[in-house]
Amino acid sequence: MMGLAACTVPAWPAAVVQDPRPWVTAEVAPGIHIRRGVDEDVSASNDDAIANIGFVIGREAVAVTDAGGSLNDGRRLRASIRQATELPIRYVLMSHVHPDHVFGAGAFSADHPIYVGHAGLPRALSLRWEYYRTRTEAILGKDTVGALVMPTMLVRDQAQIDLGGRALELTAHGIAHTDSDLTAFDRQTGTLIASDLLFVRRVPSLDGSLKGWLKELALLKSVAAKRAVPGHGPTSVEWPLGCRDLERYLGVLLRETRAAIARGQDIDAAVKTVGLSERGRWALFEDYNGHNVIQAFKELEWE
Amino acid sequence: MGVTRRLAPVLVLGTLAVLGRSAATCAEDDSQAIMRAHAAEDAAERAARWQELQHAIFGARSLQDGAAVIQIEAPEHALDAALVPITLTMKSAAPIKSLYLVIDNNPAPVAGHFTFGPRADPRTVKLRVRVNQYTFIHAVAETPDGKLYVSQHFVKMSGGCSAPAGANDAEALKDVGLMKLHLLGPFSPGKPLQAQLMIRHPNFNGMQMDPMTRDYTPARFIRTIDASYDGAAVFHLDADISLSTDPVITFGFLPDKKGTMQLVVRDSSNALFNHSFDVPAG
Image 1 (tube, rainbow over the protein chains, first blue to last red):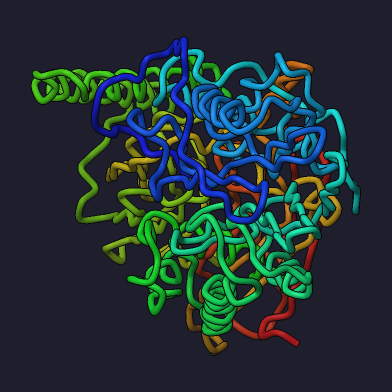
Image 2 (cartoon, chains in turn cyan, brown; image 1 turned 180 degrees about the vertical axis):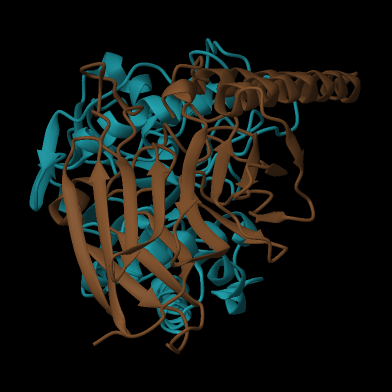
């Protein structure tokens, strides 16, 4: 997700939280705990806790699988970890450049973890972080995002991290949801932590390449996972069944945008006609579908 | 353009300050009153801004209400601030010499100035622009006798100038200058025809900062486009950093016979791109 709602309702959140309340998490597989994000855009009332974030516990260490959308979101996740285990937090994964997944990273700096990201993430953060920070802090308040955290371990293709008797297999994907998508596979439990390459119920947001996303999704479907953890939506879905809606949506976007271009339709006309059969099937459809059509149109009109 | 560029740039932070202020006031009991006060303040500021721009661009020349002359179509709420499609339609058959598109609150407000040639059909022009903050858009049509007619339209969206370029921006430079021309109707000698011109160009506007180095991606954007048909001018466009990445421009022209549309594009690094297209295609 990437949108930022402007003027949303209630009061400012407390900027400084002494004793963060732990998030409620679901143990989707042994040792894998996920906090469900709300199906909303960032607002002063939700701390940007809108993505599914969580942690994986090994025999010797913990890996955070996305740190959340604000320092407070990250702090509360850290409190959940400390409820579950005293093991050191050795890794913090940064699944892609979007603020709801990376702005919590600073909450773990005292743990001195290895921050893990796609090889394209430093560049993407360089281009966007300041823009995201300013816009997010305009909504959440000053100092809610913290300092820029850059990944200290880059994944170019595949990599593994070891939590002690438990390896997470990491994959850096080609341009898809964004140009810095990283997924993690826990072979031991057959759990694919797909982050925003998988949207369920909340409408996908396209910020990379439509054709690329369909290609990466086809690859992910062949991963021998029992379940997947979406970046938005329920904390766990059956795999590959759980990507059926996403695949259908992206397919509709591809076919109907191509058809609009072939008919000689303008981009503003296409925005009003493409993807309408998907309305009603997704939360936040009205907020993102038009934007997705513009992204798809820009990509496909040069074919 | 030289004049308008020296105007105080409206910085992105200005927008965000406003955004933050309204978010804060929402929580207050008398938020409605405060919002109304801000709206009134903004309306006065916007009117003053346009006065200032009008003076910078047109000097002492007077502008007449163009409601019956020129129509602006643009989304009220833009979906993507970095790509806002704008359609300018002439409502009368009166000849038009030139056309200005002004995005009041953009850092370089004159997004484009078309000067039409003898082969032009200026009745409909479309382009895609960046919008940096909530703004009025003004279109000004100039008739051959020098009269100026103005229409306005308000767009709600912000961040299009500082918004990071598309994920593919590094790729985009690879094909810089590549062009496509689509004819949007059947060719018939002597009949006006609409065409869509697509240009691969990142149109870097110099406003995107790298927080590590505090450096800005250097600006590199299209400055002029010249379209001519068999050597006779269709239009000359003076453009600026407000055009979207990979600009797409729809325009009309009057082909008297089968011929060649020639396009010459020059950017701010003085790179020159030339393309010719057969009309009808092939």
